[in-house]
Image 1: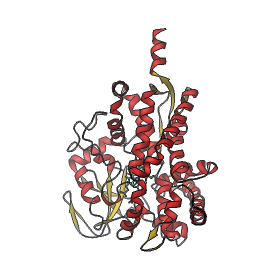
Image 2: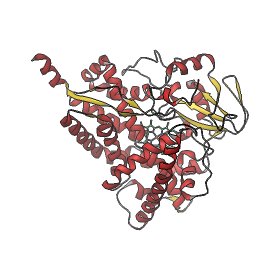
Image 3: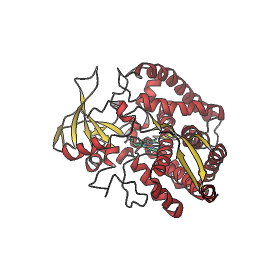
Image 4: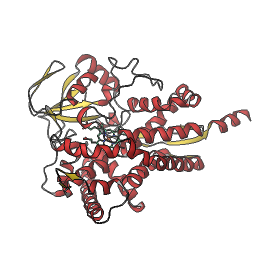
Length: 416
Ligand code: HEM
């Protein structure tokens, strides 16, 4: 398959091609686009093989790059922040920084956020209901998690929210755009400017919160002790980078694609409204069905046999979560959107040492939002086909104009 045909990904994840690879060549050698055409990568498509890679972080490391292009080696502190972002670190530094952060994403920490999350969901739903017809991506799918993550969790000022949303969107897309693609030039230019601002924002946040802590996660992180010493600016920025670009975009993707999946499967939508207790399993199915992060990459450090292939030290190894989530060795009828699916061991949050730190928060946001949607009897009907990002890394609906109706209102309409 041509993994770099981004126009193909712009019409949806290429599940037919992934299914063929799982059957015929579960670990396949794929080439990189120019100017790296003499290089390549292993595309790992089966659930079991993906888990085998992810559970061995010493054999398959992250620091050389988590997307297909290698980590940029520009000697500038902003690029250093990217290279040392939590998801790009390896043990022992990764394990130490992750261990310190884990409690702040646990049940107790989230309990404190729960009422703010409910309020944000209600506000976003009030607004789209009042509009009646709107683009659900900015108005709901983005507006809700941006406020939860950047305002309630991280403590950004209101005025900085649009910029924060722009960062997540831009960096997740620019990451995976190959040199030579028509979007490469403009995106690289925009990201250079944005990266400098993001870095400056992180540095200011660290310094301000060291002096005057607030009631937010950035203040907690700025006062951690690492190996018995106050956390350094670089260590703080490692968290800051991963949270600034990874904490809202993926949740926004799941909301938009979850709403699209319900609209496309009216029987499942009816079932959800009839049995609200299914919200939890429906959210898991949305994450499986439209896996928001298509892949993450590792680099092999030793010779290794996987799926009948010989992987050599230095080889790029791509764990294709979107493919693993449709593997019929694990999921019965994988191409059926089934909100009652149980168990549902999907890989949308990754697996192993780098398993998503914010998975519990993301699940809480998604459950709260869909519970409120069901409580209000809301249905969203796209009025034109959704537009998707041209990306082989992030599966993201970028525009989805839709009509917003409540079940009661629809019943009344048909009654009239
Ligand atoms: C539906 C929403 C989300 C999805 C699908 C998602 C997906 C992922 C995936 C696949 C990884 C694994 C990276 C790897 O294997 O290298 C990851 C890591 C990470 N995620 Fe998420 N994420 C979501 C929401 C969040 C939220 C809400 C936060 C924070 C508030 C967050 C913070 C992180 C961090 C910090 C890491 C790096 C963890 C590490 O390297 O140890 N994510 N995420």
